[in-house]
Image (tube, rainbow, N blue to C red):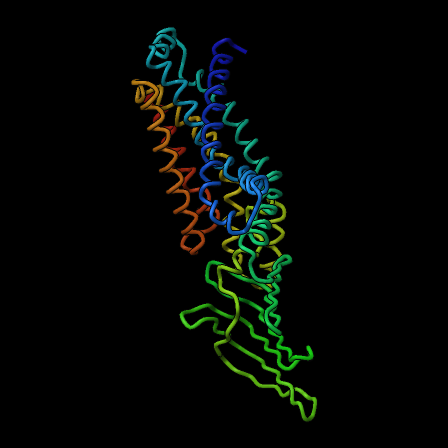
Length: 358
């Protein structure tokens, strides 16, 4: 490997480690302080609370890696531009694409690493963290879930939900069991769907079975719509359903296929599925973007401007990426387009900057 490439890789990795450690440390401290009141109220020990925060750290580290990578490229090449090293290299006939090679190599490496962490580490740690949050910190109601099925146990009442769609706050396949003091089934309600509105949960296409105590038989009634009082809100269901970050790519794909095979709308999860493949490529895009900005002389004034510019670009990308995902959740964009459009736009901008610099 050429000496120049070794030098660039060493410097970028050095600044990457410094930035990532600094950012992750700030996050751990801020997250602990933000949740301190809940830790105290739940009477958690210091070690247990720190363990909970550390379990959530891999998920946020995945989000921080592209930012740290962009900042490290901007700092390294920005200092070289300030010291006129890039001008010397160009004067020697070295193309900007020659400088880009080791930077792209780092981008591919961290893109693969980011995907690996998202697939292997994050699902395990987020499941444990959410379990601690639900059972030990917030001590929610007796709600459990397995795959798409959600069970809620209340006061002499059990509710089963086949599928819950968070985007529209809609329940599908609702069954309610009501028991008397002797735990004998006195009423059962089956509804095709339920929607949360200002008046609470409104069920539709209902079959109601009520026990006749004199005959011991169940009388059956049918209703088009009816309000039903449940002891849970959409926020409570959101806490217990398995989230996209708790599943790897294969698990999420299987979840979507099962939901769609049963006739449920899985658009939200399909957007998250494509986002899992799109997000790691931002490492490559940030490397190209940082190289283009540095080579064009945009950050020739040194370290402060490099850091400010990198944070600004990362913030702009996050806002635009999240906005596109929201359009996908609302079915205004196809899921594939919603997940990839931000990458395509930023890659186009990075390519233009790089060509202009050359």
